[in-house]
Image 1 (tube, one colour):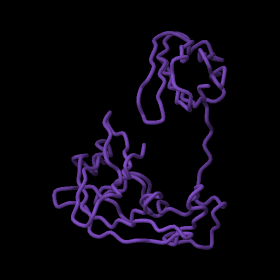
Image 2 (image 1 turned 120 degrees about the horizontal axis):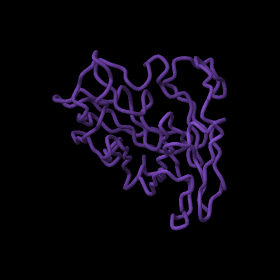
Image 3 (image 1 turned 90 degrees about the vertical axis):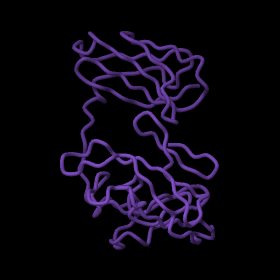
Length: 225
């Protein structure tokens, strides 16, 4: 995702679509992209459209923020289930939801609980239906064991000229596809069958590395100095 000119864009199917448009006024529309692979129970055209029903102002910690109330356009299967708050996003689900199918996360665990940044500060959402839980308390979660973490090493981090990887299991050494993606979701480097990739000409910043083998896919973040 990235933000530009008071709009938020997100990458779907190799193309950027508008997620939120805080320049919009009542009656304006924008095209959204839902999901084209959500199971046999919900076969929708992934491209939809939302229309702005009204625009209001909310005050959070002394900051006046736009609040967009939208609904799916007449020909669209996709929309947002709640108010969209400037700088924070949709308070129920960040991404567009299908009219009859919940495809991001189930509604009962979807609504935003808390938000914090350097401008707004800390905000506990009034839309969360379990106010007895503090922001720091985990609720309804399952621990996940990251099996990839112990099977690959990458170095140096931060990287200046080259980024290298090393597998701790020889079974991953036969086929390697190495990719580097920037924070805007753009592929900036790729290399086949190599454990070393030149990154010296990349601008400084944080990047994602994606390493595909014949048996698994590994991903990690690194810093380009």
